[in-house]
Length: 49
Image (cartoon, rainbow, N blue to C red; front, side, top):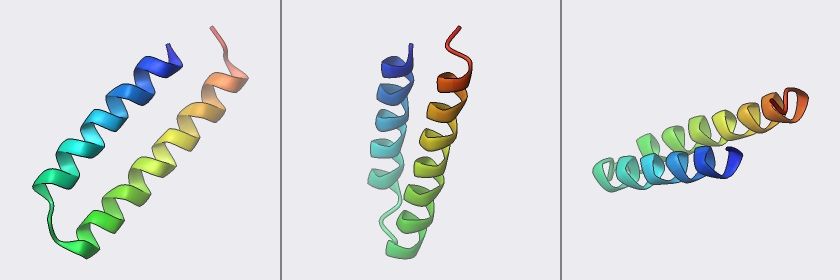
């Protein structure tokens, strides 16, 4: 479950970074994705089911 979500986020991140070539926008998007991954990891750690 968690691995599938991480793979989906990775695919989305790859697509977005491929589309967004502007450096500042890419940093913002990367930070947002990183926050989402951490939040999702904490959520699934607290709620495994």
